[in-house]
Image (cartoon, rainbow, N blue to C red; front, side, top):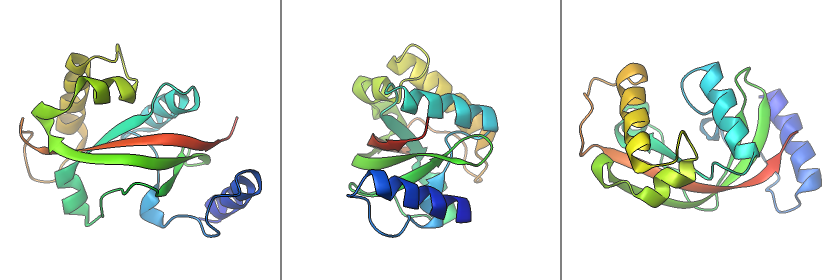
Length: 154
């Protein structure tokens, strides 16, 4: 966490609106399930392409984590675990998997940015990387989060 503390102090020097203390450990994370995922998705954030993400509601529940809230800041890690960006949550909506919108799929910035590819990618991700004792379902809750990039590291 000391890398995060140093990173946060550097970010605060550049972005005065950041709170004094860095976010709690559950708000320091990398995208995806592998270092390659983390780096690939972080690159989309840094390029301004990715402004949304989706979490599996049942995973938040299983891990005992609270849902993101608008106005909260997160530190985003790269594939090696180094802090690389700060995002601010702007909107959160929990909907069934089969009700995620075209707009949200586009905001996630992955593949061809269509809802069809979003569904294919996220279903495969859930089935290959999430093991919480509950199988994939079309009506499972999805936490659709929108965010803005507050502080990037080049």
